[in-house]
Image (cartoon, rainbow, N blue to C red; front, side, top):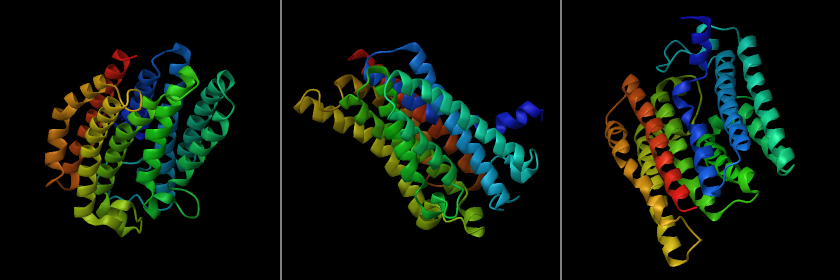
Length: 296
């Protein structure tokens, strides 16, 4: 593998849709696009996600959590493809890029984005780092919902119109649930190796059966929350999701294969579930954004 290929793999490109989708959906919910702000928000999301991926690679590598028995793609630090120092510096570089883009957005809108961004950066590091990594406290899924769902979607809407429309809050729920489903699929695959090294993720705590049930709940909940938002809006216009948001339900065919596979797949066979969930979130998000944009 080329040097560039090594770093591309370390960024985990197959999962980066989790940071792109909330920006697209949030912007559509705003109903207005200022191109440079959209690009900056996208850069913040992508840089933070690559940053957290590399930070986890570094942290799990130096702490011995990643071993040769891990079933996912090889990590840079644990495999020796890159030195721990270079992985750490790359992660900090991503944080710096996100910080610069975030400061530009804050200068154009509100400086309150600065402490919010600082909180996101702290969460990036503490996922697998610090004395008590919150991933090992079973809180990783909660934080993913908060940052890759609510905060990313609502924040992307805010930087466009300097307020958060009701539709953006509603839309952040299914986006966040599908981001959580991606993490759940990943952690389900890693239950044996995480348990063996003492990394007590929520998946380890729930066990195999409970984690599969959580995955199904996240996917079903994503579709259900859009339906609920549309019903609320019918009863009180402007208080939920516009009827065109139901267009996102057309993404149901993308959910069939991963929902079927989650019932019986194990080990490396869970990798397609992870990839399928990323595709599901992407299709769902694009259709939801299209519906929100039609109603603008």
